[in-house]
Length: 333
DNA sequence: CCATCATA
DNA sequence: TATGATGGG
Image 1 (tube, rainbow, N blue to C red):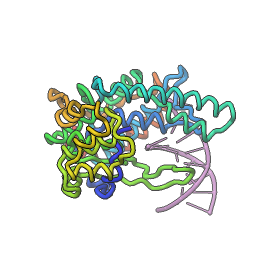
Image 2 (image 1 turned 180 degrees about the vertical axis):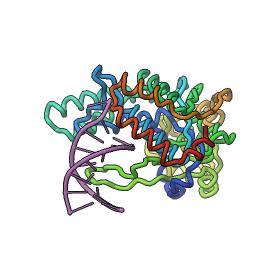
Image 3 (image 1 turned 180 degrees about the horizontal axis):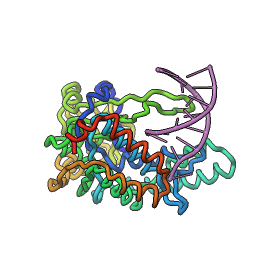
Image 4 (image 1 turned 60 degrees about the horizontal axis):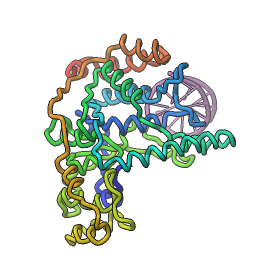
């Protein structure tokens, strides 16, 4: 998923306290939803579902995270993907195949009673489908959180909104929004601050990446960062086998991007993808406004339709009303 | 993922 | 008050 720039970006990832994140955040909806669907599962891999078998993991994730963000002074905007560019087709098909394979392995592991394996493969089988998107859109509306429909890639739309100052930063686990020009990217915005990795619980803290710091630090332009991405591979192209981020950085700084591509991938034309990163299609016709959560509406949707516990929903909403202080909230809505 | 409860 | 285990739908 995304682009493998980790090795050259790692030193520009700075820990950031929650107070420093107060403001408006453009959330990469697909990334967040995938994360929720992937992780919010029982140990054997079964996602949260209502009695009709409809998946509800993402609704739980959206609800608690949105309310927690509000308590931290973060107003989120969810940015949804539109039509993918035609050159993403290969990636889309590869992922589809991987999901199907993972689903089969999940079943096999279950039959063998291998719970840990089952969970692992179940995670990889997660899919953000139309039902997930529709229900997410509906819940966000009830929470009073604006959603924006991107014409194409959500990360590109989020980057645009950050560039023009409508949001302070974009939120995603992927680095693509930097390629699209997002001045600030925030990662690891989990409230619990903990994650299980191979049985161990490690602490995960929010981090911030400032595009300007990356470019200045590496002494490259955004165009060159995109060149690096094209060499290592993106969602839109395969990249050159054997070239990682560090090698790509050297190549690009030596101004050998064109020569390297010509030699290694003579049939690949990078220009359309380059242009897509540098001037992606974006929607400029949106408006952002936040309203207080619609308690009754949320209850009707989550409790009456999806069988959430009313007690849990009430206590989550009560916490927002009291702990943050009504004055603070009134200023937002 | 997050909330909640048991345990210390 | 902190940590770990468990359940949520």
